[in-house]
Image 1 (cartoon, chains in turn red, yellow):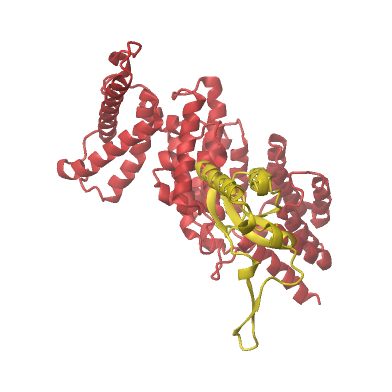
Image 2 (cartoon, each protein chain N blue to C red; image 1 turned 120 degrees about the vertical axis):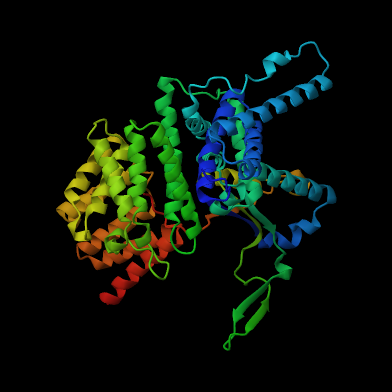
Amino acid sequence: VTSDIRHPATESLLRKLVPQALGAVVRRFGDFSAAEDAVQEALLAAITQWPKEGVPDNPRAWLIQVARRRMTDHLRGELVRRRREAASMQQISPDEQVAPAADSADAADQDDTLILLFMCCHPALTSPSAIALTLRAAGGLTTAEIANAFLVPEATMAQRISRAKQRIKDSGVPFQIPTDHERAERLACVLHVLYLIFNEGYASSIGPDLQRSDLSNEAIRLTRSVHDLLPENPEVAGLLALMLLTDARRPARTGPDGGLIPLEEQDRTLWDRGAISEGVALISSTLSKGSVGPYQLQAAIAAVHDEAARAADTDWTQIMTLYGLLKRMSDNPMVALNCAVAAAMVYGPRAGLELLQELDGDQRLAGHYRLAAVRAHLHERAGDYQAAMTHYLAAAVRTTSVPERNYLSAQAARLAAKHK
Amino acid sequence: MKYILMMQFPLSDWKTKRIELWPPQDLKAHMEFLQRFNKELADAGEFVRTEGLGGPEQMKVVRAGKDGTPAVTDGPFAETKEVLAGYWIVDVGTPQRAYEIAARASAAPGPGGTPLNMPIEVRPVMMSSSGDDV
């Protein structure tokens, strides 16, 4: 065991332990903000004491114990303050206010990271709030880092996080492991937030915004810790596999000019083989157990892409089948759109274009650039360059993403130059 | 998702109804509203930035001359109907929320405390991310 706090192993140990300690203290005392302060103080104590005295045998228990002591001190102080303010007989007795001993047996300790995630990904929160709180409390990112990742002022992010905490407090939902029937629903919330964090990082890991890839790494790390705690849960494994299999392509997504390179044009030798084999192994063993869910299906689709040495080798029939299953499971027009793309690869662009017509009536997709982009691509493959150009341009004016707009405009320009 | 909310002041009203001509108590009420409104946005964790802009009297229109030097003319273009009086940038979860905020801004009190009902142009701020879903 190293005693150097700046040692990467110690740093990553603390990163892993802090959410567990926070979960333990929150579960015991309920007050999230005060618990966070107490854990911060414990962390500070660790940083000052461990280099001198060595890392304790059980660093996790050490952190929790110090944090609980701080928390107890805090509650005593609060009690004294309140007594002074309202010297009333209706006060609750100090015994009831003071927490149980720090060393009392704790069967559910392993679940503390989960409890924290269950709380941060609370159903009462909007996605931006849940994301911010999760990154702050469970991910251990500073408020400034999160603000920077989302390009908002630090004060705004601080406010978003403190409001999220207040909202959880107001909701009155106790900080404990959800009951069995709540659990699946709450876990789905957690996985969704982790998925959004990953996506936020992945979508922006092109061009000049490379620093946001931290968000993807953080999402993978957190999902991995949930998977460690719930190794038998197939959707947790599916989400982890999906992230690994998607993130593996990151090095090939950006050209030297910072532009977006679509999947079929990527240099596949740049893909991260280690991440791919881990993801493929994970999703293969998970799928063989039955009980298939949406994350597993998406991971399976990513695996089929990743296993093709060349774009032309892609097993589109299998991808189409998987999207077909996914479509039956989730009412998401994006899934239907991707299913049409796969069908076009199997049956030809005309078949794909016909499937797109069914999506024209879907309000959720109305005016979405992705529908126009897919239509443009299929028209091009069908040899109708005029229609392709029109739809590429229609897609380019509808996207809110600069790299996507540049890519789509370039497609239209390419066709214009070629078919004058 | 970030949106810019742009306050469009009708140029035809500028000469008679611009803010410098309001009675002091109306101006005060308006400013207090803005303060409250901005604080609400900040407290909601949605605030990114806001600025008020100088009026058309201070507006210059610049074009690059032949040699790249600035050719400067006074005021808005002749065909201009509305001038940008100020803007907010907010970071919100849904476009509907941006529209709600815009509606609140539009209802800012004007002369006599009557809501200004100023048109607020709402547009998404382009992102430098790929827009990809996984």
